[in-house]
Structures are given as structure tokens and as C-alpha cells.
Image (tube, rainbow, N blue to C red):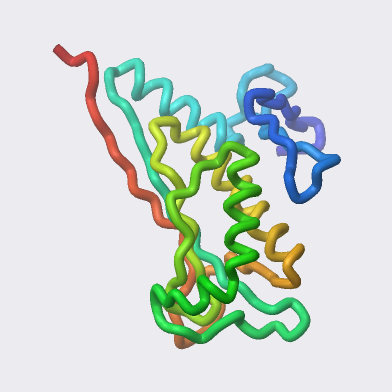
Length: 188
């Protein structure tokens, strides 16, 4: 790609959200278009996902997906994890109640459904389990928005959220797990 082959952003206004952590700001997800051809660029991951979903649907195949996002939470001033408890400890959930409640509220304001937030096994590690969706593109958009929201809510609480794959050499890493489901319809 050269400087002459620039891409154009085309906003998808259906993705417009007011940001609860920055209420004078909004976000809109966009697709990348090739300025020369006017088509969605091959470099646009969102456009690729849209094409795959459309082709599957036109072939009588439905796609559903769920995801879990793991992150590590640190006290911003000290760079220390917020806890060292074991997997699924309720202690850390109680100690981080304000952060978790604020996170749920701000995601709900963006119409992002969360099934649960729970403690994981690494120091300060949490997992956000997002609601299963039959719209993979919308879920992918919501993953981006959820990560941004986690980071900003953590900051507002004097914390730092880190999505790095491996934070501690001897502890579990962070990941984003997908639970895909493929099903047929209209195939009589």
C-alpha cells in the first residue's frame, strides 16, 4: 500500500454510542473503503466478518458466538495487583464492588449485555463474560467497546486494567475466548 492508496472510513451509524465515561463524547465503528474502487477494503477486518456472515446466512447457515475477556487489574499508584486470591474468590469481588458495579452500569448504558464478571486465577485477574449473540459483527463491535470501557472505568477508580496476554511469568495469562456456534436454518 502506498500513500496514494489511502483508505476512507465510512461510519456505521447503527454503532453510535454515547460514552458514559466521557459523556460529551461518542463513538461510532467504521469500515475501511478503498478510495480507488469504492469497495470495502481487503484490509478491513470488520468488512471481512460482515462478508462471511452474509455468505453464511445466504447459504442457510447461522452463526452465533459468545466471548469472555480476561484482564488484570492493578492499583494505578503502586502498580500492584488488586489481589492475590485464588480462582473465583468472592473476596476480591466484594473489595472491587464499586468498580464492578460501575462497569456493569456503563456497559448497560451502551446496550452491551454482560452475563457475569468473575475473578480468575492470576493476581488481580478478572473475566467479563459477554452475552451470547447471533450477530457476530455486533458482538465484535461490543468487544472493542467493552475493552475501552473496562480501561476507562478502571482509570476512574484509580486502577489500571491490562489486557496483555502474559502479565506474570508464573501465573495464568489473559485471553479472549470465543464460543462459536454454527447452525442451519431453512434447509428443508
